[in-house]
Image 1 (cartoon, one colour):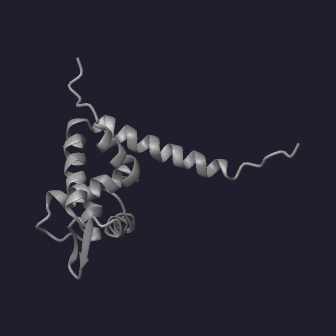
Image 2 (cartoon, rainbow, N blue to C red; image 1 turned 90 degrees about the horizontal axis):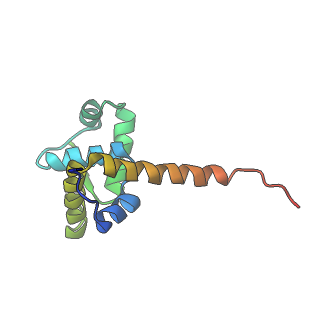
Amino acid sequence: MSTRRVIEDDVRRFVLTSVPSVPYAEAVLLLRLHADQAHTGSDVARALYISERAALDLLQVAREAGVLEESAVGYRYRPRDEQLAKAWDQFADCYAANLIGVTQIIHSATHKSAHLFADAFKLRREP
C-alpha cells in the first residue's frame, strides 16, 4: 500500500503553471524555509549543488514571478500576495509528502515543452 499523498488538482495546476523545474522549486522552498534570512546566489548554489550563475538565474525568475524580494543583501521569500503564499504552502506540503509524484509532474511538463519547441523546427514536406 502506498503512503504517498494524492496530488490535489490545484497543486497540480500550480506546478504546471508556476514551477518550471525541480531546481527552481528547491530554490524557492529553501528560501521559504529560511524566510527570515537573505540569501545570495552563492548561498543557493552551495545548498543546491549548482553553479552560482544557475542559482542567480533561478532567483531572478522567482523574483520576476513575485515569489522573492531582492535587496542589497540578497533574496528573501516574500510572495507578492496571500494567494501566492498559500499556493507555495500547499506545494511545499505536497512536495514533502509526495516528492516523486510532484517531480514527475514537473519533469513531464518540462519534457512536453521541450518536445513542442523541437517540433517547431522540424522540416515539413510540402505535398
